[in-house]
Image (cartoon, rainbow, N blue to C red; front, side, top):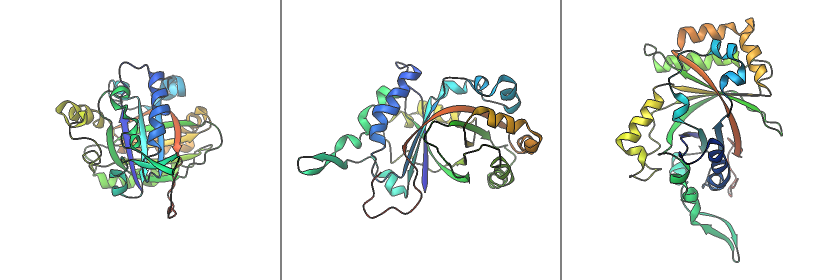
Length: 282
């Protein structure tokens, strides 16, 4: 399963809530129709701070070396899932999924994903592939869950292969036993180029300013862990209990930065990791 993250910064003409409406609404209505898409989630930064969410004392204990002005660099991120790179690269093409007088017709607006990039975003998305480790499959009830994003940075002195092994091993194994946890996925950012064939050559992301903006954002973290709970207090209580004190010990030894954000998740296409049927549609 090819999993792509795309972090975005909202257009300054939009408030945070207006951006959310535009992304969840109009833009997602086309994004979910991308050809051969197998999963599509949108995560928008919560309106409340992590201190308001977890409590100031808890947030302070859990936060280590958060990069300055981190929240000024993004407002949300989408998660796109495909079976193959070829499906991802070819996803932005006209979709034959609109009913017409002669049956299904082709809609060219899907190839443009609504053609609202310049109005919705400030610059190009930061798009990258992640190597996921499913510590606990997500179990979603028919209601909104509390979703927490944990950003982790690898120490310079630790080899990437060892960092991945350690984090996906005993750290994720223990964290996945937190009471009330409904899902946990560890996402390791890779260097695979997933932008060149997806965006136009003259996109802002390929300018010197766009590259610098993206690299500055990447400097703050290497891994994004997704947690799903019913309530924030379930996470806070677990992390502060002695049963999970080894997580603090691990972070102290093997992480150079750890910080958190609450996000509002919209499931546009429920991720499907099984083999698709011959005629597959969402």
